[in-house]
Image (cartoon, rainbow, N blue to C red; front, side, top):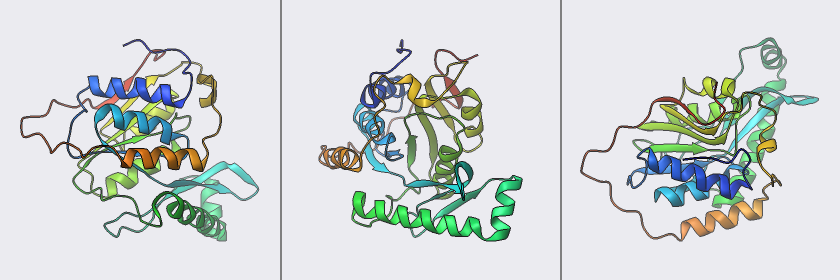
Length: 250
């Protein structure tokens, strides 16, 4: 399948990504769950879930930034799950993060991000945690990856929750960022990996920020889809492992 060098918007990117995942054999699995990272990942995940005949939910993850330098990531925190697993925290192994932990700033910022996660849980799911993940095959979707820090935390939390299979799926990403995901995912699927990667938004004609209202409308529509087919009893096709990169890969 040929992919455009620049997607019209997140919905179009999701349609291409969904078709690619269907080609790889992910469609029609009764235990499949697509988890979108809000907010930009929701339009992409909506189209992926529809193409694969899969359930759709969101996974709430927040970057823990350095005080005064919000773009400097110290780690990330991911919401807990329906099985009772508490929020999952990833701390970077670097000098900035260690100093923040020692000073208490990391814990304070983590608390602020957990408050935001609680707010979004109320908006997206009326306070309920993410769906049960144990024993399921899970595809985690976002609109793109640069460093991969947030996606890496999301994948690690899904793995820790006992998922049977964990896949990262993205329309576009920097190869270095994608490679960092391979240690926490069974497969990393990316349509476009430009050798000179800038910002994720450079690969979309319309990269307008997704609003809570737009994301919630898509989640409500996905909840009204017909019931999923039961799991197939015939052998499933083997799934790709490692990093599957699209055009532009070195």
